[in-house]
Image (cartoon, rainbow, N blue to C red):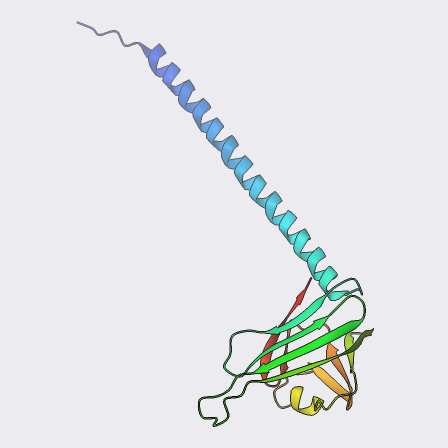
Length: 171
């Protein structure tokens, strides 16, 4: 006896599989295209953020702040009005006999001078050479102009104040 094979069933299954593969290919292609589109969009956003950060305007608040360390809490805030405030709390060391906490505060005016932020401290007894010690500087972080004025490299994301790394944020 000869069996009759129903090839129609196989052809139908083949057509379903072929359509399924086409559908998978379509979804896969859409996924790759959307990932490429998202990464392009993110690249463009990153570029605009870099341009925005490198061209600081007087409407920005710039903050240099120390992270966790055992020496000092430091915060330098440059406000949009062209004024700045400096705060430094020296953390007493276990080896110190004097456990008194020293707090240093100062203020002044800041300006944009080319690629630098120029800070002019009000008359005070601050020693800028001690605060902005060149032996802790990495490259051209800052330049002391006189006993009250310092230029800070605007392109850097962090600077060393009193030997403590202070990260820059723009708000």
